[in-house]
Image 1 (cartoon, rainbow, N blue to C red):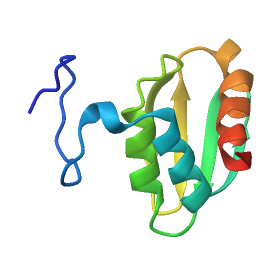
Image 2 (image 1 turned 180 degrees about the horizontal axis):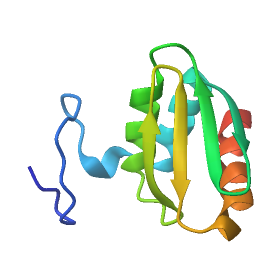
Image 3 (image 1 turned 120 degrees about the horizontal axis):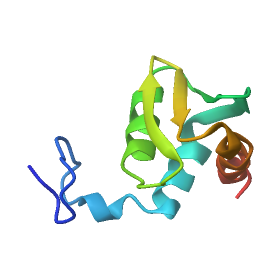
Image 4 (image 1 turned 30 degrees about the vertical axis):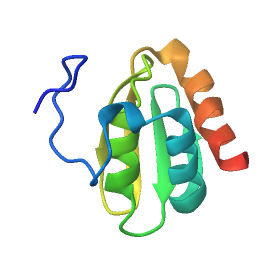
Length: 101
């Protein structure tokens, strides 16, 4: 199925639309499931509770943040591919801030 903005959408919770993946929703996902955010020069790593990485990664993928190229999720770890090395510190800070608020 295609969303109104042309993005492909495969799975949604009942009553949910792609537009529902707002910063508030991402913040709730982070508060509920994320334990830690870290980074090196080229990659941001998000640690979650066991079994939660895929849901959080999907939220990040559908958030529409321009600095994120995509994510790879395991059981409790997400690798976030960042569009540019210059954007890594700012993205790490943005994601870490979701844990605080």
